[in-house]
Amino acid sequence: DQHYVKTAEEMRALFGDLPETWRNTLEIAERCALEIEFGTNHLPSFPVPQGRTEAEELREQTFAGARRRYGTQPDGSLRPDVTERLDYELRVIEQMGYPAYFLIVADLCEHARSVGIRVGPGRGSAAGCAVSYCMGITDLDPIDHGLIFERFLNPHRVSMPDIDIDFDERRRGEMIRYVTDRYGADHVAQIITFSTIKAKQAIKDAARVLGFPYGFGERLTKMLPPAVMGREFPLEQAREMSAELRTAWESEQEAKQVLDTAASLEGLRRQHSIHAAGVVIGAE
Image (cartoon, rainbow, N blue to C red):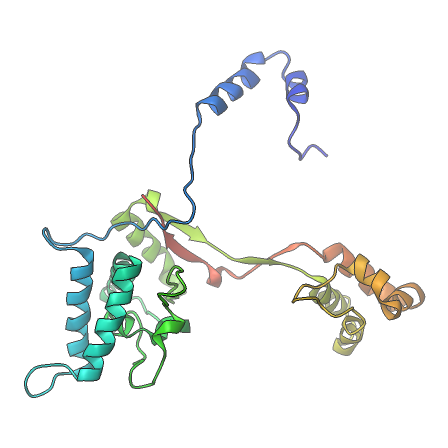
């Protein structure tokens, strides 16, 4: 019952014989000054040869990769459709300020392959990017398969590119050490996703764990009022809105057991598997 942020008065009372503790807390707080700028991306830089920009390095690596992926015509040039697509994508990437992002992700993939760590072929909208294909980030040819680049990056909808890369889980620690050593521990963080258990899922989970048939939980979830704009109603509110649900809750012993359990689960955080974890390259 003590897990809450105590008031200044409570802290002074708790540490009355050690006043330096709460006085030092205030001193430390007054020394802290942090300003966070929102609406601007802060990407780390990628080491490039002196006299060359990241955009130039990305362009050179992309066209070198294109020659490996697509081969060349008798005169040594690339297919016109390949050149046109890469020029367009590189313009968008440079315009949006993301050359370093592609260079860093390609560097991670290249390192993994060089030390024998298995790398996935790429998935999601990044598979529609020909630059990613030529850089060795993805392995599906977006030009020959007619995939759309704008689903990944769109100059009319500015957002960070998101490339999901799968590395062998058994050697994931090695990849984290590599990116930390190369780009600095202060630029790297591990992330994981989680979701909250909502009414419908809470009912299904409760019914399953309590040993009821699948159809029993399904029947109860169908008594919930329809979601509004994708948002489900909390169970207590749903109980007031749905006479059918309220009747089952009050008159059916088994339904009451499941719904009472579901109500205690609702709102808890369900953490996703560690396989959802990743590494994010942070700002300087």
